[in-house]
Length: 612
Image (cartoon, rainbow, N blue to C red; front, top):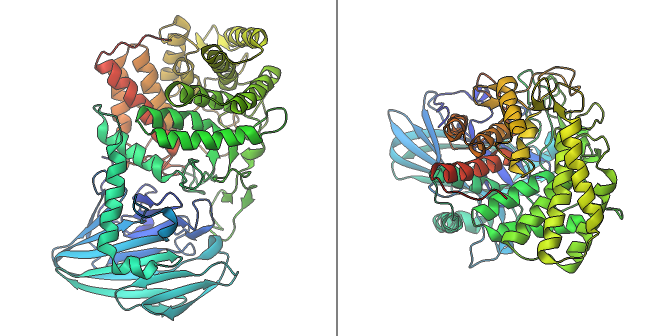
């Protein structure tokens, strides 16, 4: 899959020249050069410890790299796990670098396993010299630190009073410029081991690294074996599920949109946002995907997290667009000058979109509640009271302008996708009330649902284009319209829908890539030309399958699979030249992939599911 770069200098690595490891507390990216060059610590939404991915000079990295400049590199996951294997090959030797974050097995509780990275270097053939460098940069490279020797390792002490970080190794370490250096002269059979993290028990992990490795492999294999998906795309669907698991929080049950911030969505380096938050919008996709694959426990944890947000929302039922992993408000947006100070396009942490009004999030919320009630557990009395309050809010406000799914930063407008998801809000609430005989103002909800249905067909239909459009009276197409048949708003073969599907294929598509909306620099008020939005391509493939154009949908899907990186991870966007853009890896893309794979399997197996 994708490119197989060998012999690439670090600076020339594409953004997606990396695999991801994690422990459901935080995650790290490991490059094809053997460098951990992006990692937030101790939590996935904490400040960075390593950010050389964004700024090779100042960001900091932990690299284990062969001295031979032309070593060939292959990277893969151990089967059915999130344990990453990077193999360096030269004429003289073959070296394996195993990267993982230990996780709690059934026998020991999460609190007993330190939050750390374990790196095991083994020479499997011949001989090789490798250089080790560990240069942490605390607090987005803003805080200074000192390094001091401790038994079997080094302690990094931040000047800002944050907890110290320790690195233990079974080889000698030298301190230089407040970082750590080591040279490994290895021959066949040699093994070096490094443990970086905080808390007690780090040295024990190093001493028992083989047992910890086996335990972690066992955890992931057991988790993977619980997947009920047996379709023809088993490997990519399982890799997507394993990726989503890494983006989820063991403590809180939420799933973040991506483990990164500051990766540009355009080739000129602009549009750099922070995605280390949980969007309510992604919730419905996540719950659907997890339930589809048989991960009811994960779906239940996420539903509990969502229920808490629903309970804590404002008195009249208004939700925030996104939250921190722990359910607090997402960080306010702030420019970060300590990293990539002179690049085009500012790098921000936090997200200003948290203040926006995005009416579509209520549809996502209700869709996830409805799905979980159908396949999981029945809603509680209090849970239904919170839901009713939110539905009543949508009944009041559905006509209003908002910033929408694409989080426009140049004002609000009446948007098709937001209107559609307001319809979903009321529709799912009605279905739930009727199925479970729950108390609700049915007359008011029914009339609102019908009114929104009429409004979409009258206000958002463009007769000249024979397509639904983004805003009333415009000729702007919007790929978010692909949700219309997927949320059961319109029949997948309705002439109006087929017209829209064809218009999107004509106007927004470049090969399998689907752009978010009719391209025009003034539309969203932001600089730069973005790439195709990967999730939209998978929605498009699924919509084609629904419309009976299964072979066409399958080809789009299979072409998109070729944009995965070498270990099956997807970025948020793809440029027309195939370059990965935006945050990486992106949960929404993997969620859309799972949904499309599921639908294509059904259609290719000719399983007829009545359309409800």
